[in-house]
Length: 355
Image (cartoon, rainbow, N blue to C red; front, side, top):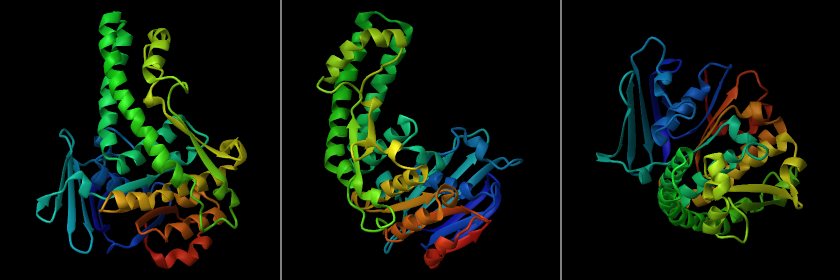
């Protein structure tokens, strides 16, 4: 499925905006503050039902207005998927998705891969960025793992509340048992997904772009499960009991999962330049394209924000060379005035919008 039409009213800077994409790729250019990211945010909000920039959707309402409305038409060869959203100042957002005349379930929506500047710190940045990338990818492929994750998070939140309240050992034991049960299930799903899908995709050798970026075919990944190797989760929880009491939260478990990039047995962050790291991260998203397309019949849509600000011209050319080979729709933003010379061979693959 690909986006055919987008409608925006009173959202962020926009009074009204109607984009008729006809399922084409889109390159949005404009100066900082022109609303490029807001277009991508609106698409993500409609499909993923959340903003990537704020938890309070009132902030998305154009100044001086009482609410915003958004609409999206997504087509494949046979069906039309429509998504409409409306948000008033003092009301919860309403989002209605229909496939033809019937309600559209989550499984009928395309997968959104939204790549932002913060994601490009994934190699050298905070663990949460890598964990979020791993978990979201796992949820898209192994759908039941998201339910397992939510069950674990409920138990984790209750245990953390109990730790902060300094409850008795008897009361804490209830949540320890719930955490061990749900955590063991989630940890097994994480391990299986890493070994059967994640590691294979991440270490797959690139066929394009490797002449100028040989390091791409030397990448290895390793997982850290969230507690010491060779120890069961239940034992790790017992061993961390005193520490957790002092901290007021749970310090071990699958919620602490991490993975690392390495080259020649050395940490990639100490081996690669920042430009190389950004290139590797974007291509990491692309590596899962075939797996995601197989897992979701509605396909994948890539939203890449301010690509020219994050990549030099050489790495930009490598990304675009691989991007246009994907059987997926691309919506990319770039700052007006930045050199787009290395995009020239690919511009015929994109419809252009200047804000």
